[in-house]
Length: 237
Ligand SMILES: [Ca+2]
Image 1 (cartoon, protein in one colour):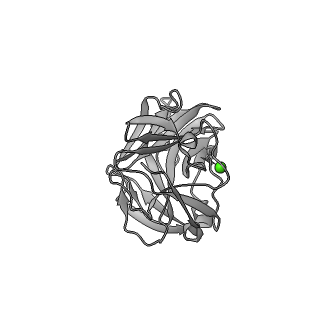
Image 2 (image 1 turned 60 degrees about the horizontal axis):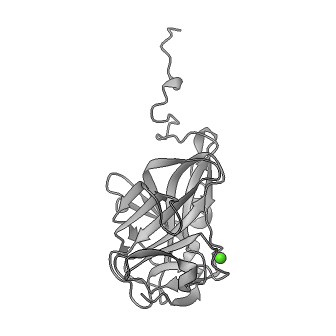
Image 3 (image 1 turned 135 degrees about the vertical axis):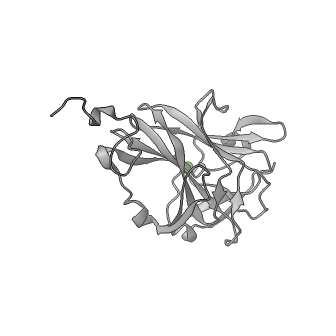
């Protein structure tokens, strides 16, 4: 484990790789949408998608590539929902120092209970085999959206299937400081969780979640939710 940082320009993150999910998530579709366009995704029934993040990474900004991971290690962000809602997507910024790397398959992305930092709790959603593209904020839909309450903290973790090359691509952090209690690493050895700040990582992980606030999450494009029996009536008109 050598969690050194390599800074690079984030110019290539101005476009977002948005991966659409089915039963086998992460491989069904890939649309290269520019970030401004990606903000226009539907939010029917009054639900408001809110990106929850600790990091301050912005387009054309600078991030630090954390290339010191080895296979089996995990980087995780502890995120706090601003509202009662559901976690519908997770996002992972994935960069190499040189750019143009081949896609990477991770072991999993998981949404977990906050647990006792730096050790996350029970698994709330398991997303096996995520495919990450270098230079993108990779977005993954949660197959079964996870309900969260306002001010509830949860953890989103990414587990490396293979050790990243020394120049990445890998997880990244911002460059304006590491917030205590918000960033964890499962390190091998010794196969234990640590606060990444205390391991010398200087920023917050670019691991984010999208929470749909303020309304039920429709499962279908016509606006009907799963199990929304209130939309139907047994009364004969
Ligand atoms: Ca920061």
